[in-house]
Image 1 (cartoon, rainbow over the protein chains, first blue to last red):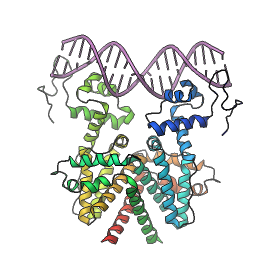
Image 2 (cartoon, helix red, strand yellow):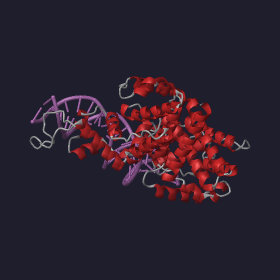
Image 3 (cartoon, rainbow over the protein chains, first blue to last red):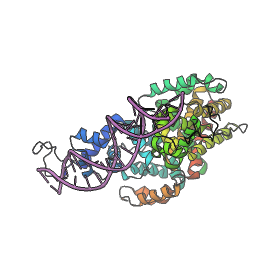
Image 4 (spheres, rainbow over the protein chains, first blue to last red):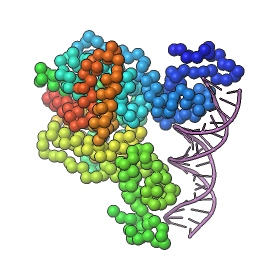
Length: 225
Length: 225
DNA sequence: ACCTGAACACCGTTCAAGT
DNA sequence: ACCTGAACACCGTTCAAGT
């Protein structure tokens, strides 16, 4: 990482804060995002964390939107293990798991992404790998695109709906809500409240979903081939 | 719908705006949400639309969160066709399509739901129907819960990722982004840019995804039965 | 050139006052 | 009892001034 100025990192001139790089500001923003959620990142709080004036941030990014894009890039740029050589199903499984891990590590990504289409180069690396695996497996380009998009929808939706580490809490909350439903209108849920709420989040649910989708894809490939 | 006061609807006393019901305020909020998105609903704008003072809203709802919950209820309470009698696969398909239609009609629901767990009674009607269909089909309770949750993740994720009516625009945007990628790092996407971007949104993608998941579920049911 | 305080047009919400 | 303006502590961002 280069500073982009002649200032030696760590050395401040005249008690003034040292010049920063775009990457440093974006990384600090990502830290705030991970710690306090998407509402926890404000320009004034980020400036405070960096020890600079609020308006100084606008020297690095034209707007908060541009800052958010950079923060997302910073999260996605982290080395992603590229799985290869295990057969298309195993490769795809590993790829989706890797993306899932990234989304769990940075829950705010999901909320940010919801607001604008996902077309930044760093994020499209996932598309590149996924499409390559599917085409190698024998899917036609159109089918491969649909299949990839489905996997993307699943991993994104799963991260969006299921709170990362507070799964136990969310499950308890769901259980309470289900138990307080009027049994006359909700007979099935009343009877199976435990099973229903235990499927909220967790690795079991993730792997059940991913496995089921891969089963479906396998079947479609076999049918067309 | 009852007014909850002695005031006759439509009659205003002394040039003052008539008293409103919680439902009327929630419905107006939903209209603003549908028209201007989740950021378009503010307390002052809603008050303006209703012709009342901003603080009057707090007579109906303790906070904006409570108002949002009521707006979501208003959207979900709308009559949902309950599909029955077509075999479990057809019933499930129809149910997911009905939920999808609701989410497309009210895009803001997705963004609101992302922030808090989905445990309001009106929303759990979907769970009640889905679980009933799956259990009747022969799924064990735990498997039924996982399967339901997978379908929910899919329909929610699809609505979250794919912009409702601006699919064409989003597709064009994706195409542009993919075409401007460095082909050396993105060889597969560069070659199949058309297929990749045409899978963004649209009914084709939705039905491909739903069909694939149902295929997977069918296979799991057959395997366990 | 780089940095930043004051100010503006918004937010949601508290509080005290109006009828 | 029901309604509401003024005020407060925040937002993102413009603008003009500081070094």
